[in-house]
Structures are given as C-alpha cells and as structure tokens.
Image (cartoon, helix red, strand yellow):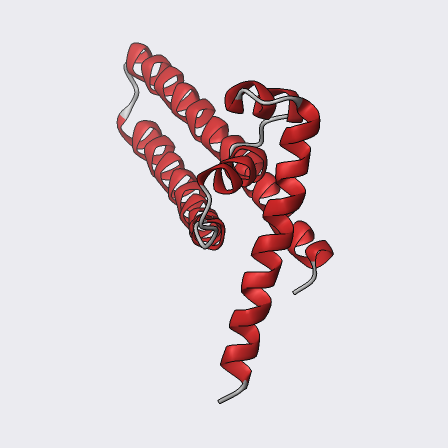
Length: 144
C-alpha cells in the first residue's frame, strides 16, 4: 500500500466521525420533537392513536439512525485496529487525533505538546511506517 492510498483511506475516518456526529444530532432532534409532539397530543386530550403513531414513527426512525451508526462504528474500529499496528505511541496518537477525532493540525499539536512542523513530520512518519507495515502484511498474505 502506498502512503497516498493509506492517506486516502484514513481520510474516510474523518468523514465517518462527522457522519456519526450528524446522526447523533438527528437522533437528539427526533427525541426533542417526539417529546414535544407527545406533550401536545397529551394536552389535547385526544391521544391514543396519534400518540401511538408518533411513537412508532420515532422508533422506526431512530432504529435506522442507530443501525447506520453501528455500521459506521465498525469502520471506525477497523481504522483503530490499523492505527494500533504502529509500535510508537506518538505515531498512533497523531493519526488518531487527526483522522479519528477529527482535530485540526493546531489542535493536534497542542494536545501532543509539539510544534506544528514536528506534528506534521510525525504524521508523515506514521503514514510511511503504517504503509510499510500493511505492504508487508499484503506480501505475506499473497506469498502462500
């Protein structure tokens, strides 16, 4: 695997994390909406069918959201396993903070207490090292 291919693959982690946040926010809005709607229905005194329908809709919607979150979490776990192949904590950390936690380079450098230049150098080292590890794994798997 080339560094460029690895970088492209890891960028998916940023998109996955963003999508998970969006879905969680949608679930929170749905909960707020259903709470408000059931309160209004309850206050109106006519509530059995409308409330049941509203709750059924809410449950179906949130089930879809949480199924998608679970699918995305699997992708995220796979990425974490890939990053954990690195034997240096600082290399794991720079990739995790940038690709999994979606921090900016400024935030990553602050968390790691390094200069921006060194943080980005570590990023390059981490990508190269992980690409080499995965290339060796691919070669080992195809040599059988």
